[in-house]
Image 1 (cartoon, helix red, strand yellow):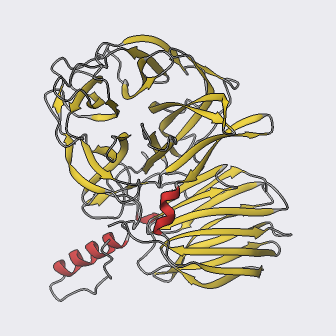
Image 2: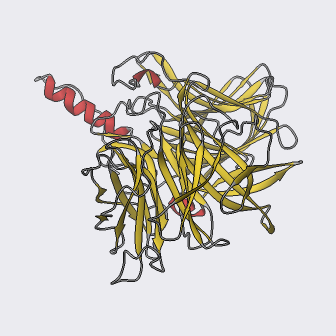
Image 3: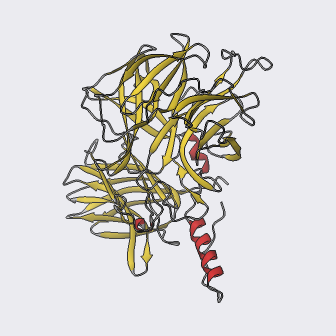
Length: 504
């Protein structure tokens, strides 16, 4: 990654300002999260292992942009995979390998890659494209769309997978305030089997980007449940867009929720984790997903020039028991450990008010344990520094008095965000403080692992039982780290910080 220092204005005025804007923009580009070199990134699409490499497709102004990696980390951009065509845009969807040529689209190779996406001309419908050369070139199916529009406004984002037990392809697709489940023998002829969700979970906005996959509970293959995840569009109830998940059973045609219909399980307690999709065919048989670090309240409102947005780190998923319940657990993939530089560890520090540390950085991983003691609130502050005479910081911590875990970016440069219309000073501005109910697992200790990367914060509390993702746009050079407490004294048990190598 190219890190540019901000330069002063030159005598010609305009040229100097342009150079300043570019420098500030690149200073916000993540080092180890994937971002496009140019263009507006949005939903991940078509995540899969092809047998040769991992593929990450994603939305970019109604096309499918493309990147590949050997390891889920070191992504290399490829030419755009799916452009607009006579059926309009190529919106979100998924991709699968068709190893046995069930589609009949690969008479020469006997196998290939099939992308299933939403086209827009004449109303949203589902189409397919196929590739015989590891996704480097694509052909549209002559009979598109393969699932026609029936007059609905919202009918998009097909997720397709092979269901071994019934030997059929399954599609789960968003349909307004629900999802529909279809099946096919050949990826071309689809039959509607069931619908789920019209009276289940959160309905503050349209449902989008569904996911459906099995996970063993506590690693027990004899106790497998199915997770159905959906994103929920921009709305006032959650202060922007969000995502939720359900845990239940799936028989190849119908999903049955294992919880009460009105129970809501939020996927990520932050503001900026949307349209998560998992990789099909992982060579280690893991379930790994990542998401767009963004929000439909301010989708392309980043204070960057020529590019916008990035992906989350890949997360390995599991289902784990929590008393009588079963919860979705998310942990960063092990491949990220290979980016770590030399660790710096700080231990046994009393926290009474603000305690600056002799550690700094804007592209790093950290692991922290903080005894809350008698403090009302305590945690870690990053992205610290001055912003034109104002203090700048992003707080990560526990509000013990309220029984909450909190991410607070109210002083982290969010006033630079533009609204959905591209205008500065959006109304309403993006939410700056997010919280979730939380109690220490044991002994009054906050245990949190996190990734700080130039313009975002991702955290995993209690070994991934709670996760949170938030954007921030601190001024260049603001890289301080400190501890804080309010209303009493806490204690840092330990803090380990790893500088992270850039992926390009």
